[in-house]
Length: 528
Ligand SMILES: Nc1nc2c(ncn2[C@@H]2O[C@H](COP(=O)(O)OP(=O)(O)OP(=O)(O)O)[C@@H](O)[C@H]2O)c(=O)[nH]1
Ligand SMILES: [Mg+2]
Image 1 (cartoon, protein in one colour):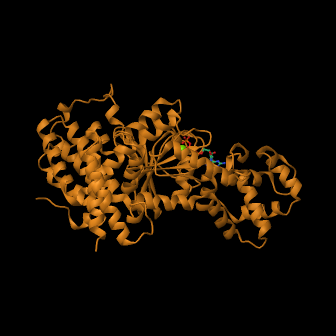
Image 2 (cartoon, protein in one colour; image 1 turned 120 degrees about the vertical axis):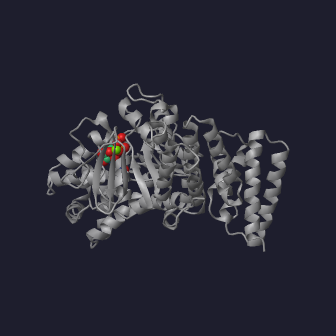
Image 3 (cartoon, helix red, strand yellow; image 1 turned 30 degrees about the horizontal axis):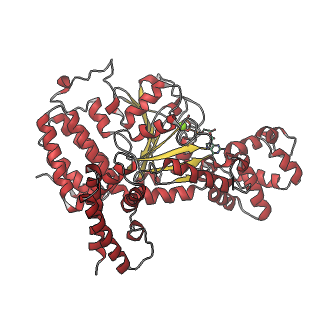
């Protein structure tokens, strides 16, 4: 029996990924070469870092946020062809960018003079599948970041390109131009389009919304769905940010007391009410300031210009800060070009924040000012959330995504015998106690996505038990004693078991059995 090798084990996110990897290894010998090639791809992905897609509407600031997260200004923002392409940022030992064409061909793309991916490629982008960027930045060892074009644009071609890449294949009809007949490639170990898409797709989503885009905006939601298409997104693998928090007019938000950050926090809570339980959380962030502070964009020259501004008469500065036009066209000692650069890096809110910081602490160094800007951007909270929500659960998320891919591959094979063998193997795997976490994630996603309807208090309980790593939080009793927790777990286990048997619909009952077992396992873990 083929088992996962020691080197592979080292790279897998945890025991769940390992059990799915073992399943793939075992099945490889029992399926057609093409499905086996698909399994090989699933195995390759299981061994890699979590794949996080940054999705959202056009111009919501996705690429800016990607740069901030990677800590390097490398993704083109604002204009240019590249904002219409999917770019995958992954770890590499040398910096390298490749254009991947639809036919699989690759071409190395030189970085632009400023170290960024060129905004214009100088080739027919209709022929381009996506861009792969290998960067030495350490953050990418922990996750692969996928920058996506803003959906909701009128550009249907880039929308469908994104959907294909991110795994919306199940909705797609065979392309006219490309052959889809399995007969041709039968016996070959090349991945066909369907199989490729079955294993592609992001495993987690960072969903970018702005004040201007209502959270329930259909096109914004389409962008969200497209990013995870073949698997359901939910609080396990999706978080949202309310970006461009600096541009929120506080007077438009009741209760903000005129404070921009307070307004952003209130708006985020409101968006969360609409988006939950699709996402774990909605966090306010100022991507632009985060990018400038994190990627070396903010220089000591900028700090010096801000210091000069801070020494100006307050009334004059206030007038200048009314609008970008006034700020750049006003007659003052700081060169207009420098002011324009400050705006590009910090926008008016950031300039004001920096000036106020310098006035409160005139001796502040450029480095400390950069640090304060970073703190003000809210990026740290997003990072922390990413590590709590995603990194800590990478094993479960990756294993669930891999299982979904395995199922999709078997389904795409067109061979009923093969489909049955794969199906049986998955059932055996899921029946094992150590795979319970996968069942729980599945149940949670069914409830979160509304596929299984539950009374609200029960939904909340399922979400709580399924999406927390810490037992106190799972039981909704943070800080309670072990004895209390054990008693509570046992009580809830009993309750869910009887709910499963009496009063629940068949779909609810399946979820209830999983929740019952989750409580039971918690109890086993903490009883004396
Ligand atoms: N004021 C402000 N501007 C921002 C912020 N984040 C991004 N921007 C600006 O918004 C514009 C669009 O940003 P991008 O990062 O290119 O947005 P995108 O979502 O990647 O755009 P597409 O890929 O074309 O859909 C740029 O001019 C950014 O400088 C922010 O937090 N505050
Ligand atoms: Mg972009």
